[in-house]
Amino acid sequence: MKNTQETNPLLIKVHPQDNVETVVNDKGIKKGTQVKEGLMAIEYIPQSHKIALVDFELGDKIIRYGEIIGYAKQDIPKGSWIDEHKVKLPVAPKLEELPVATKISKTLPLQKKYTFLGYRNPDSSVGTKNMLGITTSVQCVEGVLNIAVERIKKDILPNYPNVDGIMPINHNYGCGVAIDAPEATVPIRTLRNLATHPNFGGELMVVSLGCEKLLPNRLFTHIKQENVVILQDEHGFEIMVERIVGKARECLERLNNRVREVCPASDLVIGLQCGGSDAFSGITANPAVGYAADLLVSAGATVLFSEVSEVRDGVHLLTPRTINEEVGQKLKDEMAWYDNYLDLGSVDRDANPTPGNKQGGLANVVEKSLGSIAKSGSTTIVEVLSPGEKVRKKGLVYAATPASDFVCGTCQLASGITLQVFTTGRGTPYGLAMAPVIKVASRTALTNKWKDLIDVDAGKIATGEATIKEIGQEIFELILQIASGNKKAWADYWGIQNALCLFNPAPVT
Image 1 (cartoon, rainbow, N blue to C red):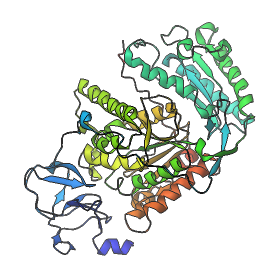
Image 2 (tube, one colour):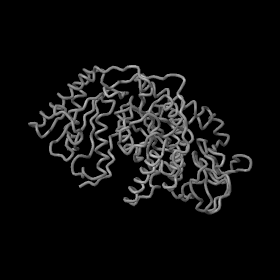
Image 3 (cartoon, rainbow, N blue to C red):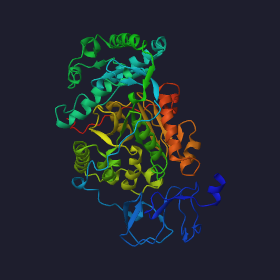
């Protein structure tokens, strides 16, 4: 297959109506290459970029995925390289005109009953890790808490072999902020839901300064005082650290008694995300993840997909899949809220694609969105969540979050995901401490380059070495293995942990 790529042009046309194709060859296609009968490359076209299948005149529609990704900014001869500079951004779909609940699919249960080994909690949720979470109510305490955490990891944690680790929930919120502003509900509920994450086993420990705006009883109305360490009540640094360490030891004693038990796959809550995307993401990795998502939903599990700005331009394909008028309207409302949020910041929606996205062949946010939503598979959307809101239903759920990897990951954790599947084309070492992250590469070249960071190679779909179904099944089975603790994702193996990053649209005072 490698030799074939080097000698013969290999391209992918996603939809019969497309008037562009994507170059698969690692080294691209040279000028003068006879691509196929009636089509010659009239200039060099890099891997993952688009070649014009027709002669475009100024203003003509450029179609990929069977959808308009833009309009020609100039005359573009057949066989040309179509990059972002030649594509005019189309108008976003008008939300009020979108149909809802018109393409509801019936999900059939899988014939085989799938299970995994999870940690069952008193509230019936199930974790994939066994961790001690320590919540901070204000950023001021982070320095002391981090020192205490390092001491716990070094001196105490080795005595509790059944505990996977300690997670300080550090953040830059809690004081100097308008906690009564309408949008302050977003960071407050995010913190509240992070603290009660299924992987923390029901243990609630909070470190407070004592004079902040967001006091512990504002976060948790019925919190027991013995679960809170207030630094201003202590006599000096050493006593502060000793109090945190002592309280942590009590929690670790209980957590160490947790054991994995056989749980149905329906107890899984899986998050889907992409980062460092390229033009292959919507051809290989995301459709494969979408197939795995369909399997998970058929197994009764909960699957969340997110990233508002990477859904907005494809939302017309999603609203028909909502289960009813209420859920469809909620999806529209979340899109409208974010439209306004961007308008307030005087930011165009096409600010989303990164330079790396464009180098990877994505011309604009429309093309990126159409590839991104492939992660959602084909099942009905049963619920829509606001940022940081806890999931309530099983099935496919849209959790509205910013597209930023770190903010999206934090919001999805707050919504309750216990494992995340993350697709990438350009590559990113992103990881979460609170939940395993399975990394799926859209290109085999990335997998070969990052053998000790990529968990699944979806690039084999582009070269014809594997099908979407085969890679999707591989992802599904790997989810069960990693959720059970039988295997580790590379991010967990190396201990790669990105910081939590709250989404705070409220004013800072």
